[in-house]
Length: 450
Length: 130
Image (cartoon, rainbow over all chains, first blue to last red; front, top):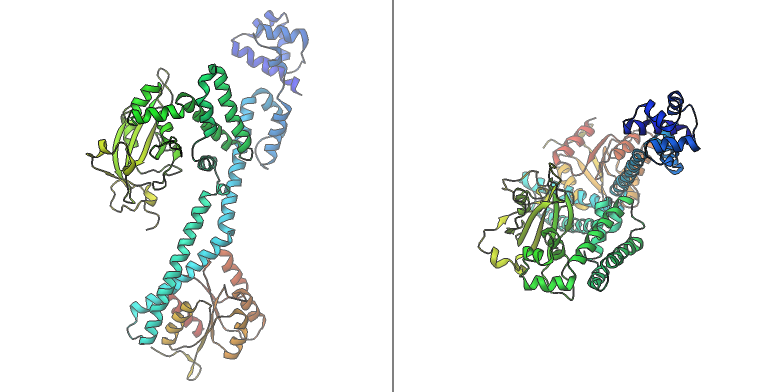
């Protein structure tokens, strides 16, 4: 019974208020022994006594009287039932929901995440084990490798092979190596296509990536609305923009899990705020006029450099001439918070980025915009602008929680190429696993394909 | 190279049931040099008849074959009773389940692709001498 726990809540509220039982009893007009019975859930209370106790504790009677929400209790019981053998008693769900509703919600949230992640793992595992294309292709590749290995072994170790047989072996190796190349190419294309397919997204971050890629990383309706915002009073404009965010959420994210929806909403909200503060055409004109200088743009619009980086990364449209900027924003531990890759500059999804990227240097020099030339291990030259700043202003005595952002642009279309020209190019990659620079002193992991 | 002898001056026969011509060709060459009399069959449906006609002493059997799988051929071979020859099964899958299936069906030896030439030759010599 929910009401049976009112006593426990009264006791907790009294202790939080720093009152003795005697003091609360006196303030409520009841005897200390009666209050003692109430606090130990041995007396039901309501009406006048409850109101008096609540008034003495400066709280609402409902905060003391109401038990946990029936939905919360039912969800907790269902969650326990999903884990046979868990050392939790379904009968105490009511007590948890009633006394610690926040913790109860937290337990349910963790349970949902565990369930979602199990489903994602099962889906990935199932795909690897049962995907007919993968299975067939790998089988074919192993057969081709077997033929090449056996034949090459014979040619390398046996001298007296008849000429006709030798020719057969050479032709065999030639044919099998062509088939092997084709199979490997087909596999790479298949895996590449799978990575692009929304159905393959297994984590909330991947789902956000798919969502952003599908939209080309920009949201024209939000930008259009933001450009007309000046015509409305500020609260109305903000409401119209947030209404658009909700429209997109409702139309496009209904099928996504809660965690992915939350990431998409956070991204759209930040995008809308940027669009509102730096309306597209106005920003494009200013960018061209100020030589794409992020600090000058930040001053012009009264925004921070990180927001200007985000805006530059989505500026190019069919009707707006702007360089194609890539962008990555990472935490101090290197975890990517935002990725906007370029076609020829992949960005790692789960951290482990190249430690030589200039953006990591900026953590030691927050606030500085660092201009560097880099050469990717594909041989292509880029220019980067990097900047680190606290994610939010730290309170007094609080350790800052910095993030660093790196804006990337191909050198051939970089508006900063001249400024960067005098600098030697840093040799970098995407991440150690796929980087081909064999002699890199910063290598932290072996190359995957070696 | 010492000839592989069956009984009194009879060369031992190996039947390779494998549909990949370049693998079959390499195996045929290697085992012929070892003194075996080697035949190749690339159609799963014809494998059992070929086996009976040849009276092979050792069978090298691929799992994935056109028309009939290596597992089906092995099952029929063992179900036939009598003194069926030892079978070295080759698979490009190498999954634990394939090995268990092959063992349950009475395979004598099991090898995953890609294998080394020396490994195959040693195994076939071992099976022929068994």
